[in-house]
Image (cartoon, rainbow, N blue to C red; front, side, top):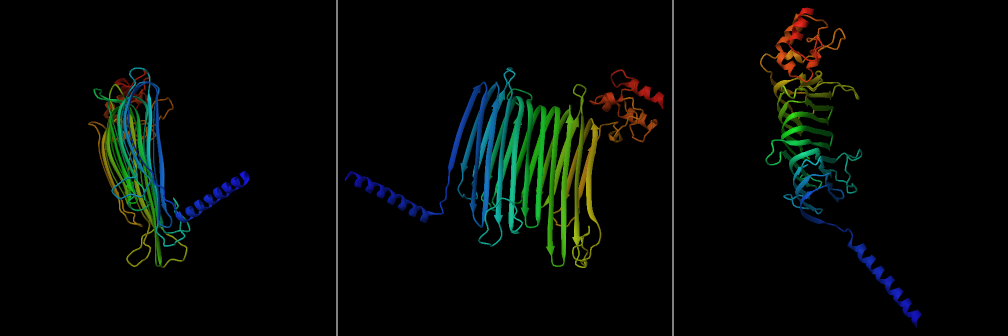
Length: 475
């Protein structure tokens, strides 16, 4: 009887499992949603390790896919940390007015003369793919499918980092909405300033974004990063973007400065029509490096079909810090067109005229370049229109040099006799009276520059009036 009872129990267990499997099979598909909301406050002295990491995605086969992530880390090896942080997260499909991920952080740090430093990183990302085709077998893929010409993809990553920090007040706010459609958005802002009662924040701050968007026949890419190190008055950065493009606004003020500022935006487009095909490309690139002195800038970059930039900056070296700035900015556009009267497979650099014929090479470039400058105020503005085959560029620049400063001093100087000093200031291959004039008119700027020993002709370890007299006697 006992054996029969055990057998009956086993049969009942198997029957229950079978019923559960049948119920689950009729319950598919199963949707899973999670919602998290956290608040934390930290006030501590001593080593700290604090980290958060969230990743989630949503997918509706044949329609759209999206994902978002938030990641942050704060580490110290001593000193005093105060942090207030809120983090909200939901993985389910949400109304347009809400965000899947939202974060806010306020953080202050002081080494308290312990020799400690802080390192902190924070990043948000958005990836989405919208299937514009009508195929019912299409799946959600993050990326362009060569066989699916109706997919649109967007990938945006915004981030900031603090390294070698001894004193700082930092705040940030981030939001990501991912549904795989045109309502996808990423918003990120950071602000750095001195702690209360202090004149400067001290440490290295880096913040920026990467962006890529792909649609039928068009790919856009963008990357922007700024690193400031020294005595920081403030650093502000606001980044926003989605399917329509990305916009970035940043401003900063730093003294005793080390600046590495790199921006790169690119768009390539392709459009085909009956009898002709056109391809267009647009690029923007800016690089800034500075050491010593004081640097202030504000700049807006916008990549949305066309490219728009506005940039204002000032740089001033001084007797105690020295230093120079090197800056380069280039905006360019070009187009290729294959006309209806051209043989199949051919492609020429041209725009079509009113009759549909290829009319010539289409390219336009605007640029600004400076090297070894110790005092300057500059303002630049560039516009590239939202036209597939267009090569129109509007580029304006306004630079103000100090009084008695000759811009030609920016030309690459050369050492014509290989003695370690640079006599040829106008770079014409010889020493002449014009070099003396350039040395005289740029005397104050050269003297306060970090590379003034390049002009130490009498080898006394410094650049002074005696070097000007020495070079004059050599002409």
